[in-house]
Image (cartoon, rainbow over all chains, first blue to last red; front, top):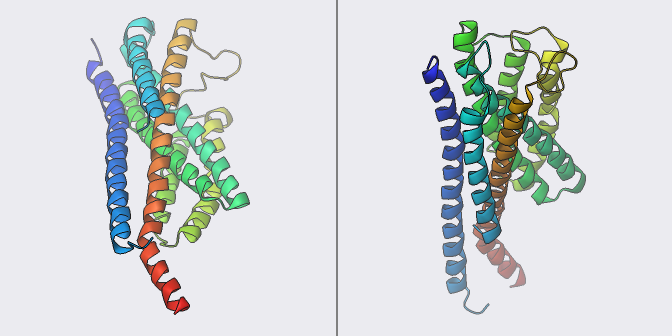
Length: 50
Length: 234
């Protein structure tokens, strides 16, 4: 097939950008949720009266 | 991720798998460009989705300026970042198509240049947000910048209608003499819908990241606020 490599490069890179971004987002989300949980737990410990 | 969002991701994945099948199997072969024309489906659909995202972010920024509610700022940010991803795909797939067809990777014609400027403007928006640590000031600056950056969006869309460009003329809503074979139209609409679903997935996740970052900022500031309140009371 003529231009097979161009077609492969366009779709390969296109999907890699989309899924790379989605993976980055999901990782960021997981990290933030974990950090927030830890902070909230630490606050509960430092303020036992509340 | 909640059950609804997981379902949305599943629907988007199935839809995009079907779109992939449609691009390579269902879409007819174009007479002059042959297989290479199939790049059009991801290139043009991404471009259109990107412009929709930037238009949405413009509306969200106007919403922020009118109401000063953080959720509009988070929505504008989510739409800009997602739009930038789609714009990147456009700028990557375009030259891959252009090289065998035009014999060059890039030319500074109106459509290409304005699209590159669009990408730079929204990269600037994302960088600008890192300059201020004060959330309200950051949101305000970003919203004002976004309203001005949006001027380039209609210019990109109409550039191939207003000026003679190296870039092919409009296929969608291009007037008499333009258009697509009905089977190509179906494939294009399938890909476009799949990418719109992907945009929705991106925006929902990025909005949640922005909301969590704000909650975290508040949580990190809270001990200082507590101390200040205690000091004032004593």
